[in-house]
Each structure stands twice: as structure tokens, then as C-alpha cells.
Image 1 (cartoon, helix red, strand yellow):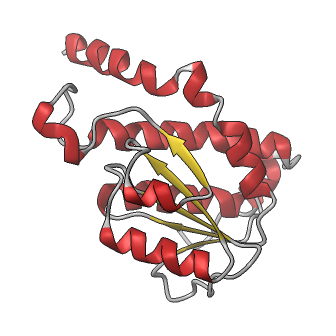
Image 2 (image 1 turned 135 degrees about the horizontal axis):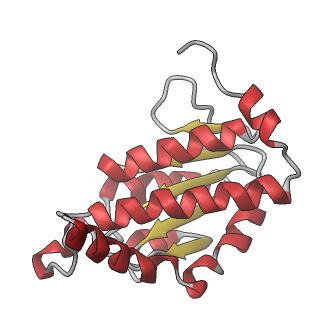
Length: 182
């Protein structure tokens, strides 16, 4: 079993390279400067975006998940942060268009920076990894888009650490923002 774990760790390494992690600073600056942050993705990518929205809320950001009943309208000063791993999802492209028309900044995280959705974005974050769309030429031991999704989670946790420092948020403050209704 350790052979698989070693292979997985080897596969994760390029997605956490210095070049990839250099994207954290401009992303942190964009998110810290946003009036509101609305996060969205589909499928398992959507789950990673929801996890990020929760951590952004813990940091004290006005963060929401698109599609939730409490999500506010997007407007100027806001950031719509979307995931489009394969570079194209029609629903994500439509939402990005609405956000742009409303004066919001669009940020896209993707494995395919040449795709239609990243092409609409004001800031594109490139995570080099196999997605479900590219699994026909499977290079990962993980099924479908799991490598991309795992990298999203790890990249986002590093982003939260950078944002915590950038915004001078104490770990105790983050903990105080955690729900007590569990």
C-alpha cells in the first residue's frame, strides 16, 4: 500500500512547486481586497470551493457560495472565484459573464489555463494536474479528477495561511468564527 501513497505524493509535488505557489500572493491580495467573495464550482471541484468559502468566512471575509439561498448579488468590488478544472463548464462560463457584466472581478482556478472560462477571468490560477476531462490519457493513479481536487484543497489551505498572515488574523479569531451549532 505504501507504494501507492509514495506515488500519490510524487504526483502532488508538481502541483505544489515554487512556480505554482508563487500564484498565492496575487490571489491573496485580490481576495483580501474584495468587498465580498462568492465561490463556485461544480461536482467535487464545487466541494473544494465550498471548503474554501468556509475558511474565508473563518478569516472574517464576507464569503458566500453561489447557489446558496443567502448568496448576495454580485457587484462591483466583489470577487467571483470559480473553479473550471478542464477549462470549460457552460454554467461556470455563464456565471463568469454575469459577474463581469456586474462589474465584479472574476478569478478562475484551473488545470487548463487556455480554456474558455480562464479566458474570461481577470486572474487565472493554474494548478497543473489531471482532471476528469483529461483522464482518458491518465497520468495519475487517482481516478478521474481526484488529483486536481486534492491539489485544490492543499493549495487553498496554503492560501488560507497566507491570507491569515496578510490580514493579521489570529488563529483564535478564526476559531471564534467557527460555528457552534455542530
